[in-house]
Image (tube, rainbow, N blue to C red):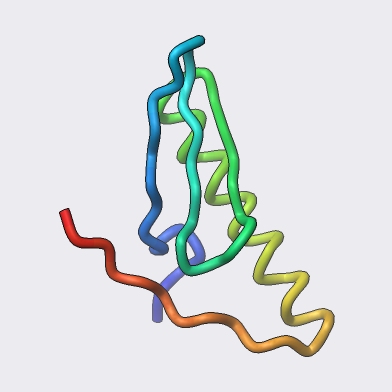
Length: 69
């Protein structure tokens, strides 16, 4: 069984420093952090909360999207 942190993400370095992260399979699920590790950790938490909200509202959980390199 996959965990929320198994979702593929798009990690983008920001010009002003730090990183932003988007989760293509979960529209609007984004996060950021000063370091790559912090950004990914924050994103894992954002994914968990996003999925908890979907479940609480009885919404379907979207399938993961595979990202081509």
